[in-house]
Length: 187
Image (cartoon, rainbow, N blue to C red; front, side, top):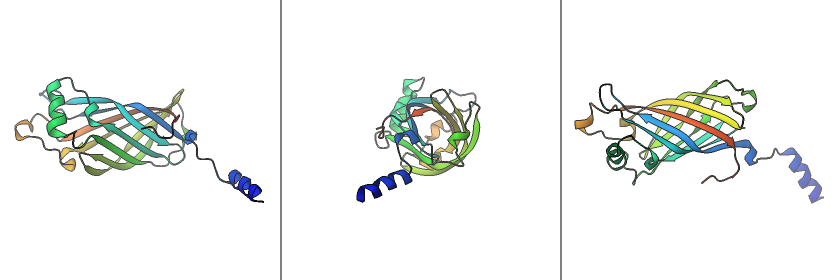
């Protein structure tokens, strides 16, 4: 009797498998805090991890701050040691939801979705509302979003001598090429 009851429940409860998620461990996040007429302040991290639950639209991404690469080594050193204090705050996190996400309606053309979540950088958290563009690819989905953050919201101090060379409004671009999740725990 217990066996029949257990088998009946298995058919009624939808399976929760790794097939419900897509993931990448090589996503690209770029930030830019440049001011015209001054040296470009831009860096790229190509080791961002992102995971999307295809059933719920929940999205989580994180990266190691020290993996941002600049054109100038001195900028990278200042970024890690002075501005972002990456030894004290080694990672950035985003956790949110793609509103009204429906994997089954995706095509090979970008579709816009509202993206809402919380971004944590430098030990501070800020609510983010933006637009995400998502489309199907041969192997999964391509996710792209852009949002602007203010350095003051994350207690990132720009020294007075550099305030005219570094913008306090930072543009963050996220591009993730996600595929079916092969591992339940990506870290």
